[in-house]
Image (cartoon, rainbow, N blue to C red):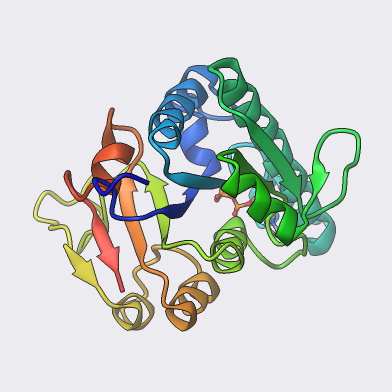
Length: 238
Ligand code: UDP
């Protein structure tokens, strides 16, 4: 990648909630298109990029809707939701001319490749955007953990967490006007202060792999490019 970019290969985690846009539920294709355009812009400039998309906009294993359901089964339904989001994102990327592959941790041969680490690495080397679906493929986990695992397996230089807030704050900035944004944090700060950036298991894996986590707002136009080039506002966890 050109030297303008801080990282050569990144994994971008986008939560399902981002994809619902201003809707209360489901997939807002306009928002998916916005995220796809941002990914396309940096991919075209040579940044190797893989995506992990959550499923919370459709189904969560621990949600009210799943009450009374066997936890593992509910989690499998959540994983299926991430596959739907992955296909929506693939469609949006291919529509604007970006080669993509979806790899699912739960094999589903008719619609996606199975997750094969070395094959995913080849796709990245060829400049394709790889979308990892179905998290880690096991219940009792989340897509945050899936994102951390794939970032480590792909040898990513950073794990980018695209949210609706431009970093980690001392309190919820949408509720508390005195909240301030952390420029930097350590993995240990996040775990000890229980800052809920990502799951503890995801944070611990990034700490052990030495991969920085960058929390930024994917809702602002140009923010992905700015974050990758060290402009704009975000929080870096190292
Ligand atoms: N899930 C799971 N194992 C995984 C990834 C996801 O069981 O490896 C299930 C879990 O029920 C979770 C749901 O899929 O609630 C959706 O994922 P997540 O909550 O991480 O989505 P996000 O919050 O990022 O939208």
